[in-house]
Length: 298
Image (cartoon, rainbow, N blue to C red):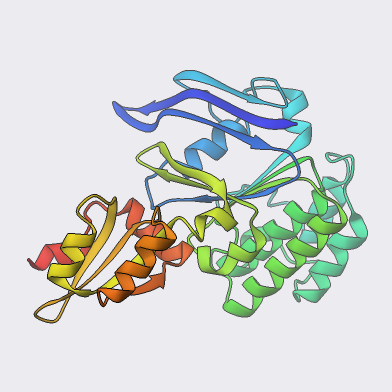
């Protein structure tokens, strides 16, 4: 079942396109990573999915309905982000108690166990928490709600490494026990890669790639060797990143459409073939230039 479907989705702010003719589908019961640099349009997309914003043009359906001002969508979606405004008159325990009336599958026991595990004082108020503690509490809301569609926008902002690791573990365990559709926008792809089934990579409000994580790991390959040999071998290849190493050595990342015979010939020619990590690939694809920051100094 398709949970989210975008067709030509565009959102304009003051003449600038935050989303630019975006089309994609997200299927149910998958964890999808929404990846891209700041300004790529990730948060705007999540806000439209959650019904917070209305698109300028194009179409977006959530559960086959337009999400803007839609009670059905609101009851089945939770949007967790670092600007959440929670009642200042209620303490953390009271917020959790109140949440139970909004979400049909709310797990009160899980919320309380997580609150205790992360050492959050139930009598404290949300606006008195540190940034990292706010993110931790917000994440607890997202997990305990157990709605059909959960949206996490940079959910680990301010968390230290140990808490981030525990959150990812908790998310995976609860997802396996209670499958639902989850989208995570994050700058820490290397940390969440093992959680994800699909990745939606965005740049300038558009989709660059949308594919399973397993395919992303094989999408590109690195070549290193003499510059003249590199130039010869990449003449008809899709080069996504290039870097000079010393006087006559180069490294390039290229689209991995090599045949087995080409691989063997490349090795015979003295080229070293290396994998390109998913995190590096996303950086290369969203960079403005093929040389990255090195181009500034050339």
